[in-house]
Length: 208
Image (cartoon, rainbow, N blue to C red):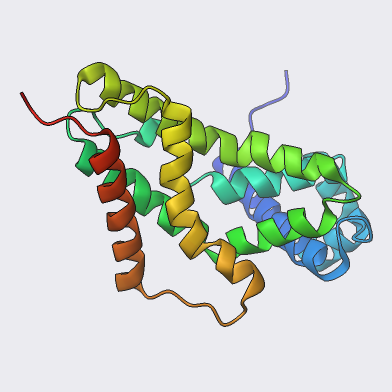
């Protein structure tokens, strides 16, 4: 039986993994997904090719890791309790605003958009492993609020799309095409609060 790795070795492996993911992200942006070789990623990360291939046997697996890491800070387990639609949406909206405002998220979208014509599977991976799980957490929350009687939502998928779209359309998409687009923390809070108010006005139920 192979002994379990020690805490030290686990920490070292995690640190090397983070270096690899960061180096890959930077290279994909600089050279494009196709031209960035795994050998170059290993060299830029300061690890051996054997170390890289042990964790990421293919470039696709490495890109999947970039996607998962980029979205990983927001988890389905963090779905707020039901009963207060405004409070729950505010939590979800602020988490999402923090997520899409990170430079790494902008970088990820740029990679996907740049490589979409030649590698449509990157967009599919981005959606399936990144956006979809987060979207599903919001949709599940809206379903729960509907069942709890705090909201009247016939189409929770549409409502989740509307809510997240109001936030990303201001905080994320302009930054992809306008290098000088900046949003202050106060403005970010206002964007989220307005999205919450809009959804609550449309779908919320008054307490009986």
